[in-house]
Length: 259
Image 1 (cartoon, one colour):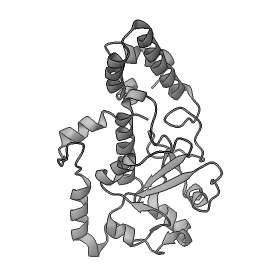
Image 2: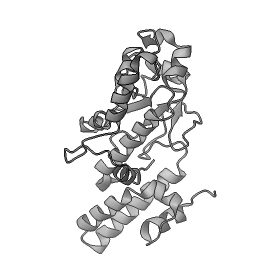
Image 3: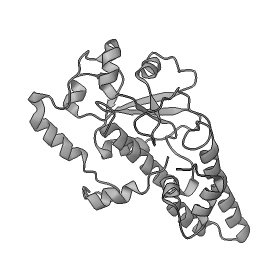
């Protein structure tokens, strides 16, 4: 598929029809357009809003290795991963982060372990927090964000093939919607996925795990736990306090993804 040009982006944003590839980037701008229509009362201010959005989109489209708000480049070395829409780091880079090798460029790091509690208790990366539900991941956005601090999130699960990527995408979608009136601002513009997940990391850096152990999701002693936590991980209360697990709702949320 040919690379999207700035013209494609502008045409997709301000015409009645949008191509599928542009939709992957610009779906959150539906909300931004509504905010723009309300706040931009005059033709001049409307043009400034329009030009600002176009400029932001072009920066994200053409910027080389730029983080998701277009403000600067990624601070960690990245690698090609299985999930082309996500930014991945190697276990080696993760180990360097834990050892403080990037403390001069990163203010805070939150390692988000999306495995189920029995897996986490059976061994996890030092300093990681266990967040396997959407409510827990969404709670990250409720905390104050220091503008002068670079707060990096690193997601992973057992293999970083399903649960970690899913929560990464969910967090980004929620972040986009939360900041929909100020595109492309994000609370967490710099987010990574640990390539290979906990298994790959544990195989190389057992000394950076606590306890030094690895309990797989499909452990024979935790079949009941697996069923319980799998169901729980698929529900979340959302903004209206009601649990939502329907496929239609999850599909609707997925259309807001933007990277």
